[in-house]
Length: 62
Ligand SMILES: [Zn+2]
Ligand SMILES: [Zn+2]
Image 1 (cartoon, protein in one colour):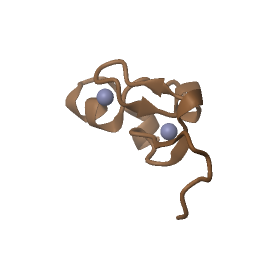
Image 2 (cartoon, helix red, strand yellow; image 1 turned 90 degrees about the vertical axis):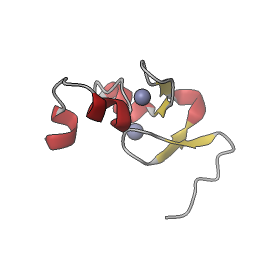
Image 3 (cartoon, helix red, strand yellow; image 1 turned 135 degrees about the vertical axis):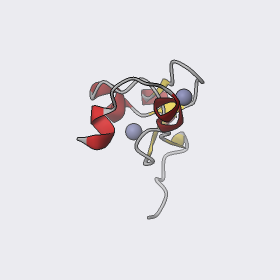
Image 4 (spheres, protein in one colour; image 1 turned 45 degrees about the vertical axis):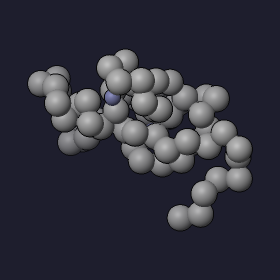
C-alpha cells in the first residue's frame, strides 16, 4: 500500500483508496472527498454518511 506519487492524491471516503483529488467530488452531505471511480458508480455520499442514512447501500452490500 504505497501512496500515489500524485501531489493531489486524497483518500476517498467511500472506497478508502487514494485517488486524484482534482478528479474527485465532494460528499453531498459533508463535503469529504469521493473519488471519480466511486462517483461513476453512483456514489455521492461518503461511507460515514451512508451509514447514517436509511438509503439503500447496494454499492456496499453488492
Ligand atoms: Zn472511491
Ligand atoms: Zn459524507
